[in-house]
Length: 184
Image 1 (cartoon, helix red, strand yellow):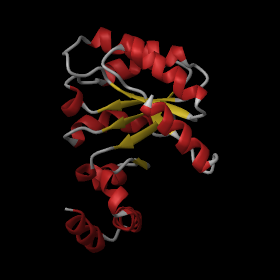
Image 2: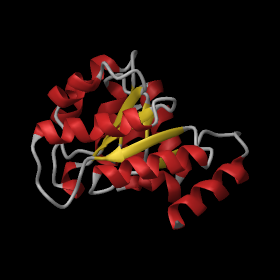
Image 3: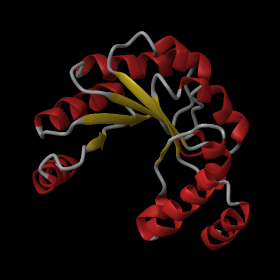
């Protein structure tokens, strides 16, 4: 109920000036689907879900979990949130590829430890929204063609993140190092 109150209040406040992506992940798929349906009714524009967490599960179960949520609310774009360190269940590129046939799959947020875990997704940046979620990988991500970032640090200091990305675009390595140091 608290999550739904938050979603309703937020969608009302922003009045479609910005899209609202509701995180509806849950340890249990039935509850995640219920949250997805309620979030859609609250007026959000897209959904996101972390892989099942707490209990280790198989790749097939993770794939089915995501597929079930996407099919519960097929009219809304859906983003997979890959954060294996927090969830305990890795979301592989193979699972991602198997879900590409779902028409409402919009993208993936990669909050992973190494750039090697991001790199296989980069060829998809023209087809899907591939988001970086680890600020330590931000420069490498941007230099490799990545275009979308969800940054916890940007919540507290958006100017530094924007300035860092602008410096990457300009190819200003001195400024990049300065902003990286500030961010660190």
